[in-house]
Amino acid sequence: MQWPVGEPGVPISVCSLPCKTGERKKRVKGMPCCWHCELCDGYQYQYDETLCRLCSYDMRPDPNRTTCQPIPIVKLEWHSPWAVIPVFLAMLGIIATIFVMATFVRYNDTPIVRASGRELSYVLLTGIFLCYIITFLMIAKPDVGVCSFRRIFLGLGMSISYAALLTKTNRIYRIFEQGKQTVTAHVSSAPPPRSLSPPPSSACSCWACSSGSPWTRPTQSSTTTSKRP
Image 1 (tube, helix red, strand yellow):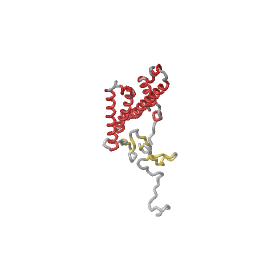
Image 2 (cartoon, helix red, strand yellow):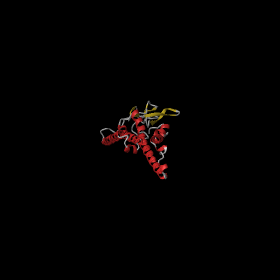
Image 3 (cartoon, one colour):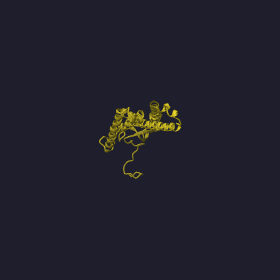
Image 4 (spheres, rainbow, N blue to C red):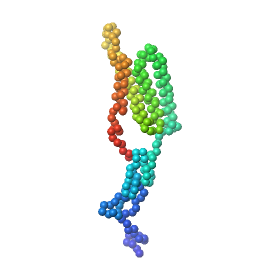
């Protein structure tokens, strides 16, 4: 018998074909025996014949989209050349920073150290030290603690360093401005303004650091929920 469609066998008499793996059945309204096959896309997996569910935040669907599997962590390894070189340079920087800080502490009361601004120099060295420390946090295996310290120290070191430099620059500028206005011996022997002394300068540095830190300002990521692609 020859069928009108030109097929040698008996035509399949069904409303809808079975869905493939990873697809759910979407019923056709008014036709309980018919459905459309809909792929569980994105981070969804096939929970049953008619339902797709979303994987948890640390999981993703397997290739067949029948279950969820942990998302592999891809990170920079310690033995990688891209990690060895920064770690080596960071170690040199840390050693140099500690050496300079120890030298400042040893000769803390000498005229050279006092003239360089001891308090602001210590603040600047602390910021430089934190900038070198962040190298190890960026290579370490990410977890809640490491990611938290990354967010803090990544901006803290730079904020402290720039705050100290800004305060020292402002202090030097004010000293020269005061020298221009000195016209008599009486004025020249007068004490410097309070803002030029070490305690107020350190306070200005702390204020500049706190106002420029990234965690003191609201960000879009802290107020909205990020969605996975």
